[in-house]
Image (cartoon, rainbow, N blue to C red; front, side):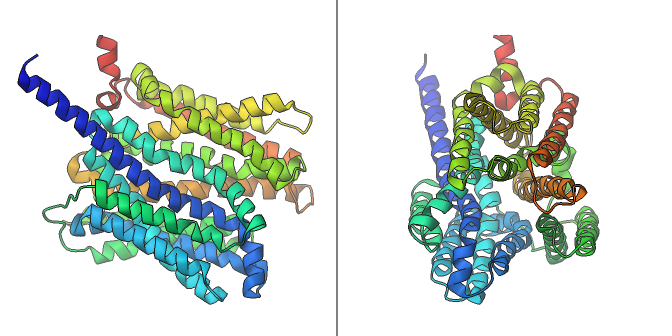
Length: 481
């Protein structure tokens, strides 16, 4: 081996190590962000007592966070290009961390809502800009591992968040649900300063203000409609009105982006089959099914089985372990089978494991429940990583910022849509029985319907060519060898 070849190999190894470090740094911040979104709900009654308001009034803290985040997500890609992804990412972590501190020390509901809005603005920039940083620092051969690293917070935080939040609220106070973000945020900013290089676009262009206003309003109305449908309050008229407004504004934003020279969001990424299928069509439906599961499982164990929140949490920890267990074999499986086979076969496993959860009863053996939840966690982790990696397998450098922003927007929609669909089925099933609370039979309908969505979406991936994303997974190279 020549000196030049040795030097080139050393540079590849160093580059791969750098990509992993950057992905880990981004993952730390993602974990803080997603954990906060799931941990807060457990302490709403205690917060209501502290602010001398009714517990139902506290839901505005979650709603305003979600809506503010929706409003600022479309702006994230342009800000990253204009001011530098590292600088914007660092700022977003700082804003989120400081807002968390003020949330913890809020003395009234008004103060809390104000700082939750600021927190949502910081959160809006964190995910898409963090993903842009990872995409810019990882070669295609390193993309599977890099995406897997930044995907684990989305898999683990929603599962451990409620358990951790319940523990903190019970044995400490609700303030610590926000104060826990401070050391994580400070650590994240220190890691960004130390390990993340600055990469800035030469010319980001002028801000497309009209496009920003239309897309922000459209996404905000869509998510508000889904959030309201989950709460099942106020009747159908507000939900339908907001949903219609969101669709109309989103269509107007799309037409605007397609007709101007320098749009806020470049929609050409949707012409790339791997991106459009893994984010917009089959990918969205698949995420709807998978995202509904962490919402349904704790309710199943508490309302259907009659277990305490702590006992239900132990089952969720098994589900969480399944999410972690898949990480070590994700890359080899994608290399051996390729994206299409993994998304179809693993997607079907994930979907049927969801359906099987609907047939669990309090008399089902604990071993079988643990095995099923572990399998569901494994397949969920594999599917999310495959979807998130394939989405950017064929995206060019000029499309990265817009593609990352579009992916974040669609993931927010699919996350709330999954919860909305599951909640709607539970509510309808209970209403047909003339009851207000769901029972075990109602959960069966919810799991079966959500699983059916997963089956259909998995089969849609058969439309992908067998070599889809092969440059990233190494599938063709493995076949030749």
